[in-house]
Amino acid sequence: MVLSLVVVLILAAIALPEFSRAYRIYQLNSSASRLAELVKLTRFEAIRRNALVSLQVQQTGANWLAWCDPDLDGIADVTETQDPILAPISLLPAGPPPAPTAITTALGGGAALITLSGANATVKFDQRGAVVFPSPPQIYVLYLGNAADPDFGYRAVVLLPSGVTQVWSAPAGGNWNRVS
Image (cartoon, rainbow, N blue to C red; front, side, top):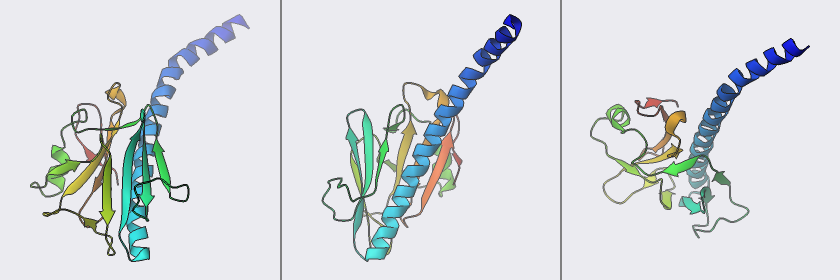
């Protein structure tokens, strides 16, 4: 009986760190997917209403809140679709994630990414579902990860001028790969 217990404890000690790592990666993937879906929902809401609709991103303490803001008031009303991004995942400024060279190359090489994450941001979609930009059109990106613990990698939600959303993934210090 004692020998069986020792074997179970050894197996648990080996499996627990890997389970914890898999759970953190799941949290990161889930946060990126939810944020990308909220961007798409905001775009489709603009098309459905045939009106300007904005996506708002605001820091709330250590966490972030993103929401579809069809009334354009900049306030997260209870009736508006919201997505909290909770610790240990955070929206990061451009510095911590790997350089976006692979993303810019895949998007045509000359495109510069404008980082929206790491600060409060607003993105407006017009009646056609296209992003309303200052001139010239830009490519927006929101980086997700944990700057204090980069071992779980990073995710990037890329928003093209047409309103199309892409999700990219990169390990710490690695290259970006398109996920969806």
